[in-house]
View 1: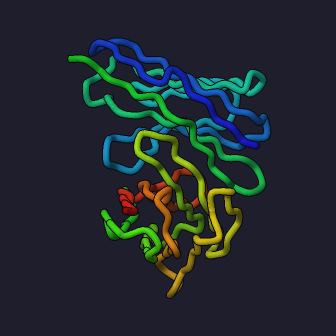
View 2: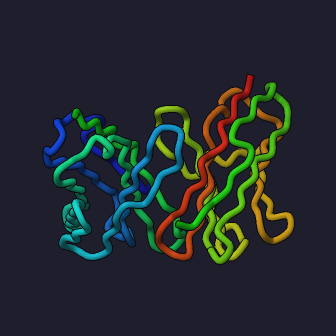
Length: 111
Length: 111
């Protein structure tokens, strides 16, 4: 059964700090991994994805994937109060195209 | 960006009644998903479609649930009869392949 686990559950950091969010997934047959941002009362919004081992950078966001350890991380540089939201890790699996979400990390950026 | 429209935004009904949730996906997207999110909890997969046909249903997709595409454009999720544990926000999402675009959700309250 596909499982996606995220840590920490919540995180409070001062504005300008580097933020690191973690995600572990259960099956190396995962196809792609996505990070989504969800504000209260809204649907999730896609931020960044990764398919191959290594890292990918887009603006203030960097994502690292290690398929051998079944781990992916998201790093947010120079965090802003507007980054405060729940961050969801999502994994697409081969075959049934099912996309499984983690429980999320609630991020609060203090001004 | 692409818009996914969900109506209604809120629905309050009595236990045992029928409810129909509607979602208009992005027009050229072939993949479609329904998710359930209980307040403050994980986004849980219900069912997904490819080119209008069901690909997989989760264990959460009870016999009381049904999905249709009445005129080949929008999708419906029907729950009949509803139970107290059906209270949640239901999100739909569509994609061309990778990025999921979510609606704003329908908040269902079963009394």
